[in-house]
Length: 404
Image (cartoon, rainbow, N blue to C red; front, side, top):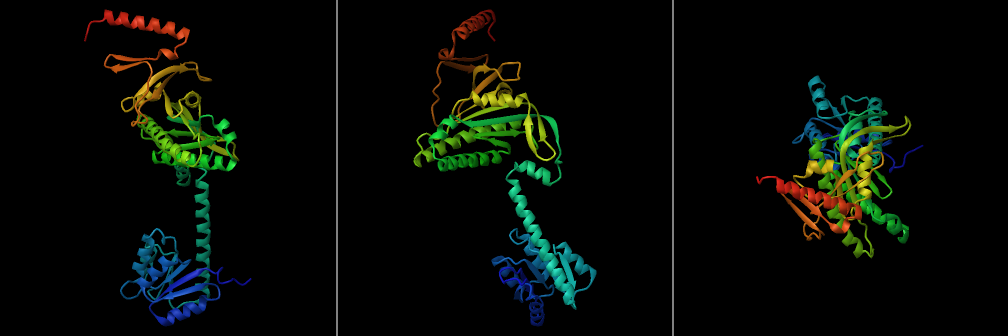
């Protein structure tokens, strides 16, 4: 079947000899769209304006020789993918070696054999087409993986097999408060827009902070720090909390935008963070697997998020202990987590929105020798009795101890 002009690949022929340009155009015109130029500068301008599928390039030309043209093409990210074949009368090995070092895919010496020339041109165009298809497919697949995981797989650092390792990670969970109820009130098109807008904005912040995005579960986001790349356990935790703060601040901006679009009850996000040892790696079957984290510490992060504060961040003591020099937090009532024998100490991050005065009920004091947070309104009858006992014991210890 004959190819239409639009279907034919484009070949740019660069040679300062008119007879050579005429010959190449005649040889290639049945199977290719041919552009001819007689100067290196014109070749660069033509390629930049409309990148061809292949360049046939002479070496010996005035002002800018073929080597320099090739070097500049390969230095330009927008043009570096174009295959270059040197077509020259220079037959010595050094010239050929230099051509390949500059990035040429082939080196053909004159006098030409038309059948061999055509075969090589068609082979390199076909190879370039397959390479572009694979690159496009790779870019599409990368959207289904966290960039770090994608990179480690394609660079060969990780094997695609069912395996996991035990590491100390910082785990992040977030969800949208009352999402199911609010979703019922929204049109599907509006829900899709707001949810995708939210995920896009939060993902950008996560990637800017070096996070590994595990998955989206409905309206929830699962993220972890410490694998496959780590800055150390303490810095991973700090970076996770910095990310959480950036997310809540961005949410405040998005809420204003969404109100302007007519949505009266914009999303409010709850965030939970925990640090601990987890198993991380490929879980699933030989046919379908997921790179994720499992373990009780992951469950704790989920429970912290479920019991979190809208527009706030709640972290476990294990995380707070790593970040307390940089962030302030208020301890809340401990909570129980499924599969965890101990009560989980909870700390609500303070100062997320520095432009707003904190409205904190009760008594809050924190200085050398004393850390006190008392909110009587949150105490039940049972915990009130415990509070009295704890305060009495604290006063007794204060009276018994000599001053520093």
